[in-house]
Image 1: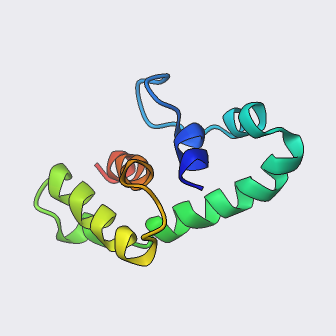
Image 2: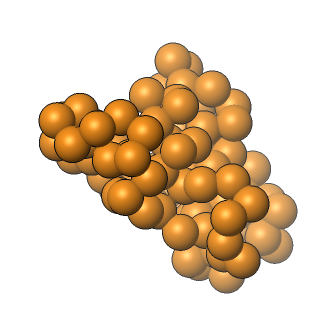
Length: 94
């Protein structure tokens, strides 16, 4: 799932975080995407339940707090995948 998160977010392809379903389809195929995309969206929605945007004094702390909370709930995900969601979250709540 970590790899799928990174593929979904992309890396260095955009000037801002952009979750793109087409990357998932391109990488894993249409059938796998039908299974993966709902799981990815659910993980993103879960990440966005963080209230770090209310508690953090700056963007860096917001990213660290939100990532730490999610890491506790999903130790199976890599730090890189969690940080990808944290970047999206921080961008959206800036």
